Amino acid sequence: MAVDIRDMKRNSVGGPSNLKGIKWIAAGIAAIFIAANSFTIVPAGNTGVVLTMGEVNSKPLSEGFHLKAPFVQRVEDMSNQIQVYETPASAVSKDLQTVSSNIAVNYSLTSDKSPEMYRKVGIDYQKVLIAPAVQECMKSATSHYTAEELITKRQEVSDTVKESLDSRLSEYGIYIEKFNIVNFDFSDEFNSAIESKQVAEQNLLKTQTEQRQTEVIAETSAKNKRVTAQAEADAMLAKAQAQADANKLLEESLSDKVIAYEQIQKWDGVMPKVTGSESGMLIDIDLDSLGGSSNTAKQPQTENNAQ
Image 1: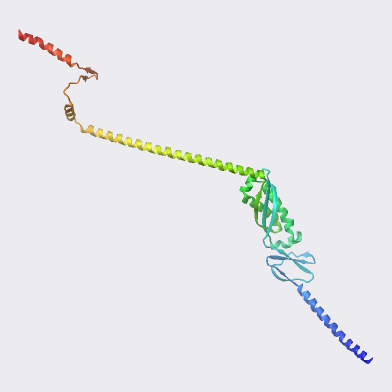
Image 2: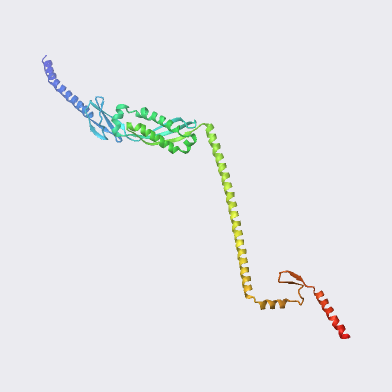
C-alpha cells in the first residue's frame, strides 16, 4: 500500500510538468501560425488587393513583402502582366457577306484599378468584360467595310477595333496593348468570285500593258520618222541655200564682157531665127526671104551694067 502511495505522489508531481510542456508547444505552434498569417508576398507583375473582413481596401499592395492583420485580412493577387485573349468571331460585312475570323487581343490591367476591378467584377474579368466587348466591337467595325475591303484594309480594321475596345474598357483599367486579326474567312462562293475578279483584273492589266507597249513603240517609230524627215529637210534646205549662195556669187562675179565672150565661144555660126522686140514679142526671122529680097534688089543693077 505504501508503494502505491509513493507512485501516486510521483504521478501527481509529474502531471503538472507535462501539462506545462504541452501548453508551451501549443503556444509555439499558435505563434508560428499567427506569424505565418501576419505577412504576405505579392509576386512580380501583380498587385495585391487587401480584403479586411471581406471589405476591399482601395489602396493596393505593390510587389514584394507586406505585413497584414492575421485572420482579419487576406490578400488577392491581380495580374498586371500582358495577357493574351484569343477567340473566333463571326460578323457581317457592309455588302452582307458572312465573315469568320480568328482574333487575338493583348491586354493588361493597370495596378491602380485592381481594387476597383476586384470589387465590381472579380478576378474573372476576361470572361465578364473583355470577351463580349471584343465580339461587339468586331461586329461594329466589320459592318463599315465591304468583304473585299476587309482583306485589303486589314490593318485599318484592326486599328478601328482596338480604338473601340480602348474606349469601352479603359474605364475599368484595362489597356489594350495590341489587336490582331489572325485571318478572315468567307464563303466558298465569295472566294470563287474574288479569284475570278483577280484573274480578270490581271488579264486587263496585261492587255493594258501590251497596248501601252504598242503605243510606245508606235510613238517611238513616229518620232524617229519625224526626226529623219526633219534631218532630210534640213539637209535639202542647206543644199538649196548653198546652191543659192553659189549662184549669187557666180552672178556677182560675171561681167558683160565675160558673158559676151562666153556667147562667142559657144556660137556655132548660125544666126538665131527668133529675136525679141522692145514690146517683149518674139519675131520670127526668115533668113531665106531676107536673102531672096537681096538678090532681087541686086539684079537690076547687074542688068544695067550689062547694057
